[in-house]
Image 1 (cartoon, rainbow, N blue to C red):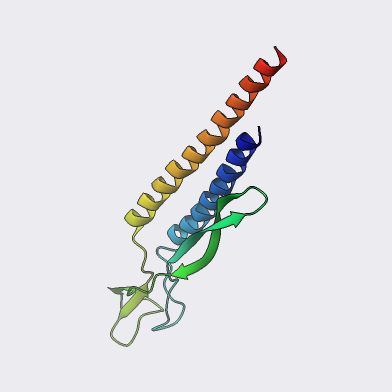
Image 2: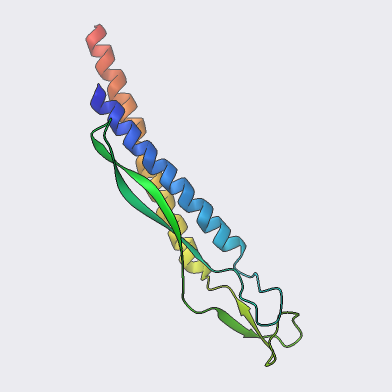
Length: 137
């Protein structure tokens, strides 16, 4: 019975990790077109969630844990918009280093991983219920 509960707790850590990942993806996508406020100012910089395995001594198993947020240090996008309030002396405005196609792919991966962890919880609960039914019988 403990193995069922351990499986559920490990999968729960995966659910939490993917929920945190989705929050970061949502923030990135929401700011995809956020330019800087003043001429030459840096815009929003893409964030990347990190994860690491963490030993849960009580469970005797590794769970996933959300680490720090890293920043994508790739170059900002630059667009020629001389009338924009954030345009530099050459008329260029810096935009975030966010590719919405990449964010969409990351979102799909997070969704699939979330669903896989949810399936572990569902199947573990079903197996535990069946085991209890057999023991009662």
